Length: 253
Image 1 (cartoon, rainbow, N blue to C red):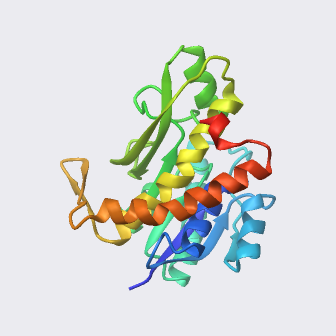
Image 2 (image 1 turned 45 degrees about the horizontal axis):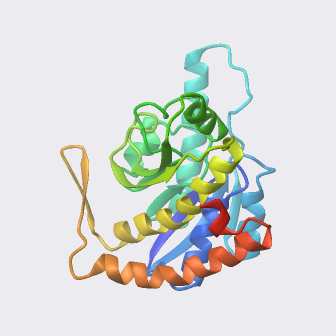
C-alpha cells in the first residue's frame, strides 16, 4: 500500500529533491509525495515541487516577525501549525518529512503526527551540535572550530524538543585537512541524500519501533541487502549529477 509523504522545506530543498529522485528511480517503494509546504514564498523547493508535478503550498511563517510577548509568538506559531496540519490532512499524509524546515514545530503539531515526523540534521554528535540556533552552516563552522576529526548526519523522529527525538539512522564522514564549512557541508550532503530515503523506507515498511526512547530497526529477511542493491541506481545517478556541477564524488568524499 502506497504511503503519502508530506514534505516541509524552507530553502532550496535538495533533500526534498533526493526523495523525489529515489521514488522516480524505483529505489524508494510504496511511497508518493503528496504535497510540499514551505513557510518561505521564495523557497526553491516550491519550484522543485512544481517541476516534479507535486502540489506546492506556501503558508506564511513567523520567521523575521516581531511579537509583543512570548505568549503572542507561541499563539502565532500554533495558528501556523494548524494551517499546515490542515493542508497535510487534505492530502491524507501518512508521514511528515522535514527537509531544511526552519521553524520549530509546536506540541500541537507533534501530537497530531506522533512518531510520524522525521527530521534530518547535518551532524552526528547530537549532544554538542544540535538544538536551537544550531543549523546549516552554523553546525559545520562549530565542528571545524572545535577541531573535530569527524562529523556526519542524523535522521531522527521529531518529539517536542529541538533535535531531541529518537535517532533512526546516522552516517559518519571525516573532516579533512583544509576543509571549510562549504566543503564539509557538501561531503555530508551526499550522505544526507542517500540516508533520508532509507529511513523513510524503513518507516513505510513498518520496520521501525520505538522502545524506551530508542529506535529499534528490523533488517530481517535481507531487507538491508535489498535496499543496498536498489540504492546503486541512485548512487550512479548522484555521481553523475555532482559531476555536472564540477564536484566529482571521488574528490569530495
